[in-house]
Amino acid sequence: GEVTDCFIPTDYEGNPRGFGFITMSEEDALNAIEEMNGTELDGRTLNVNKSLPKGSRSEPKQIKLYVGNLSWGTEEAALRELFEEYGKVVDCYIPTDRETGQHRGFAFVTMDPDDALRAADETDGYELDGRILRVNEAQPKGSGRSNNNWNDGYDGGDVYDEGADDSWGNEAY
Image (tube, rainbow, N blue to C red):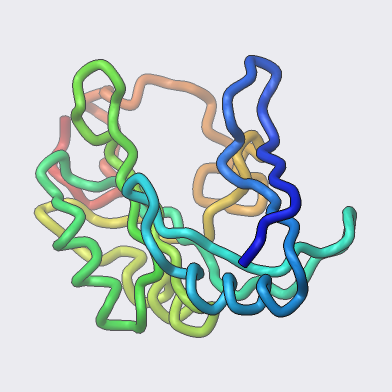
């Protein structure tokens, strides 16, 4: 359909924030949502929906899970396969280090709410590629994961202390 306006918010450095707003007729918008939602653009799955008035929130159509303690050798396909046992995986993303290209030891998996909650319950503590996974609902960047108690009270001590108990269930460092 005909696009009458397009707005892509940027951060203070002028970089796109990862979402945008398209204005078009109601009929064209509904068709665009139907046709484009779930398609890939530049390696990322698009989430296309009708925007809500500023300040309002809707129930999440999908939940993004944080998957921590990944082995450096874990491939996206293996992670996706594990989570697909619990339902449709909308997006699976393993962030990588910009300089080395090595993944950073965690991932995000997006699923429908019921499937995501079951997957989080059943995969938290699951062993994949020799590592015990830590799985919970992802928190917005900068939130400090204050809603998760698994890291509350961390004092910044030496995690490589050979005398420390390895509560993750992995080999000692």
